[in-house]
Length: 377
Image 1: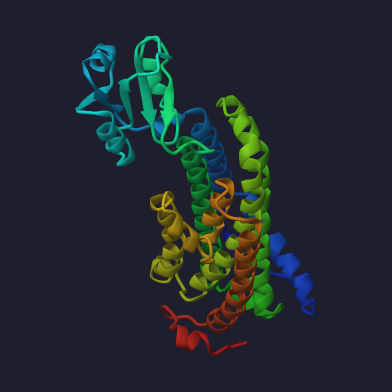
Image 2: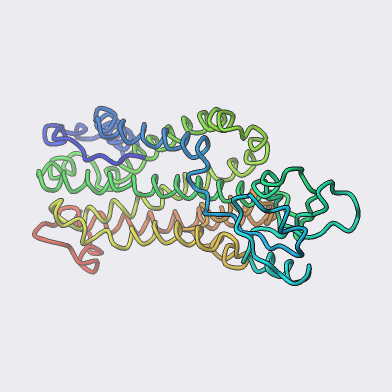
């Protein structure tokens, strides 16, 4: 992810020599963009902050915990067993009523009398999908635990993976803003007029996308190497085997998603002539980044909505890997969503190329899309 604004070295860079081929020009522009950002302190500060955040999420999971744990209690015996604990106790008349509260998510668990004689304390714990470790730990002797809807993956683990995927997508998506800032800087300093006199405008766009995509892929590789270390330090070593298949899907989805957003960021920068005006052209791109982030975070426990989001190109980079992680989607769905995303990338890049070419040399305020569609090269 690149988030810093390009330095003024763009103003002194003469660009590729005349007669350079499209491929060579694209490579030179990509190298120029990468070197420009790798020399900036802001780039490395952002990278270190994200890396530190990865370790914080895995090592400090209590940061995302909720408030006081609540339980439903049935009978006086269970109330006595809960005396002296920090749990919020809610009295219920019978076991079916306690189970109903658990299913309705009004309490975290239920403590009921044990009629089987298996519990040394005379009580049993009823939970929905995962054993409530805080409730079990609060009792003097660990009681038997019954799960109403046992899950292969715990809710805490699922939420942790969703949060990591969503945050990575958000940070890398916002990182594409550097392409818009670079484009505006070149227009504002008139360097773009020198560049387009020596290379095709589309090669300039392709070079920016390729350069920033390679920077992002490099950072993803570092995070992929750091993730196992962070999980082990956080005591989540067993999670590696479970999350590995989801990471295998997340990386290609994230790379294609970044190219999709990068082309739109480039157009957002080409439509304006000053850094101060960039906010007026990037609203749509911001919505396409923030929408999937909040959509997956809010509806992660809604299978129907998550299935729809897994096929929408701008949200599939988060939603589909999450469904694969939770074993809620077969492999063919992931391939179908990835193919749909790839087709969307091709279409959007072609449209962005036309708009970028038609607006790059226009100055004097924000360029309307109708005017940008008319190419000037």
